[in-house]
Image (cartoon, rainbow, N blue to C red):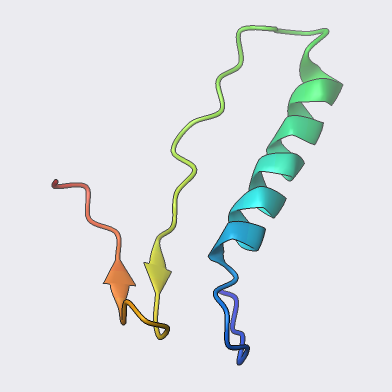
Length: 60
């Protein structure tokens, strides 16, 4: 869980950080298996800001 009192959302920075971490792991493991797949990287929950509360749901 990440909390921020800033005026702008931090979800893009958090998603970027997660993706970079996964790409680092991929880079270290690609010699073993290049078929690895990075998936299901998404925002789970966000509160505040202009759009209010967001809660990820698997249903469209």
